[in-house]
Image (cartoon, rainbow, N blue to C red; front, side):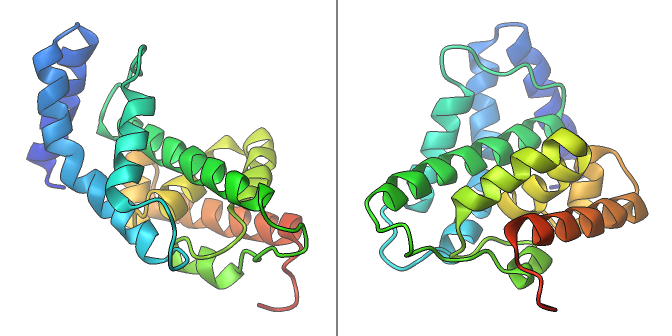
Length: 191
């Protein structure tokens, strides 16, 4: 997204905080293509026959974010961090519902290669969510890095910009988060 569009999103968020319903509608129009891109990227990597589709994922995230009490987002980065977090919650809710119907031993495992690629796959989203909750308790910024890269589909530059940190800081956080998640998820084995 260009700097001009980034500024426009931030301005719309400010107008929305002041109660403008028109700004809310213009914001949706401005960010919808980006929300679809993020959701489509994730859904392309999901298992075949997944009952949630790109539009459904975007709509569910929108309803959660703009429900009775919309968030108080300060800028584009803050907004997309909330989007990534809600996308994570939606996907975890769907995974939990699906998992409840399966036998406990029929789990997929999160792979380090998927974390390295910065995109989700057919892994156990519930286990990842639990591990991320633990990571957030010890390093909230590293958790945000994982959310933005893994669930938000942002690349290194976009993630660093969204968090207001340097690329080198982002890389340190990403390396730490990956190592911590590998340990928590029991992946080890030189993957």
